Image (cartoon, rainbow, N blue to C red):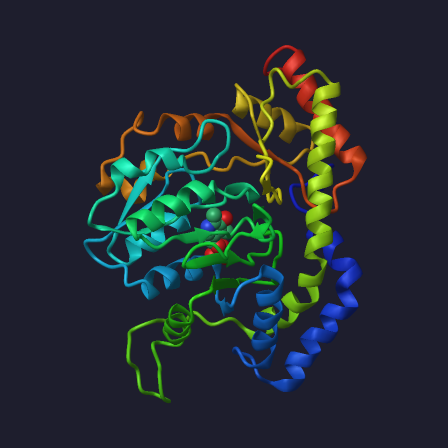
Length: 378
Ligand SMILES: *Cc1c(COP(=O)(O)O)cnc(C)c1O
């Protein structure tokens, strides 16, 4: 069954770009140069100017961007990496894979981002990096975080996987910390046709370390000065991303307009007392990778929407301290009450650029029906 309102609509995004994308793919197949090369170099230069950073380093995925950032900073066994407890698994896995310990911090009561005020008590001589995530497309409170980080002389790595184009005080995220990490997973705001990611930095020394680690720590040809990995981007992904990247500002604007329209619709339907809408502080530009509402009886609402062909998704049902893979860290229910509450109440509803006004009305009407009607009845 095709959904009346899908969570994402990649075919509609692809259709108008089809000819250009096929031309880009043909360019790569004709060149027979598949790994890095001129396409990734051109993409890197284009993204450097778009994101306002000195160095953009194309990589194999957002996950690998995080791993590479921590490797370049020398994070290893015995080190702590401080991060929000409410994020995608990859944020914490990057630290764990290097033998470091993720140290979790609860989120703000109104946004889904790290509560910077709760960071100082967990800092110690072991703290090797702060790893905020700009969750759902909203910048974390970077002003407070960077002040704290520079006082403590701890580098910041931004997990900007969901926030390409988001700003804090008019500057794009990803350029504030030692490193910014982006993902071009197909359903991200800028998506490749497979896995791809980006690492950004304004530090020439860190950039050259990261570039070397990206190719197995190779310095001169087949002479390796460090143990890195294969974190390279395919030329095919770079060529496709070069077609799509110029459209990102318009797609982002469409997402923002949809968000504003949702706000009006929820308000007009008298639902704002029951449905908590996402916040957008005045100094930050939200790019709405997700439009995440909070409701009691979230699971019943999701079933109600499913039954009506309306897509929705729970990001994330399990906070990081309760993930089975991190059981050895000793996290317990109750440790991070705000994140645990968000995990129970949050529901992402469709916000992709191609969404129509009528589809948004269907979503809001269906939610209104659930809120006002007899609970749980189909
Ligand atoms: C998508 C995502 C990642 C990982 O990116 P991949 O390209 O899928 O490896 C990391 N962190 C966050 C917050 C993400 O949303």
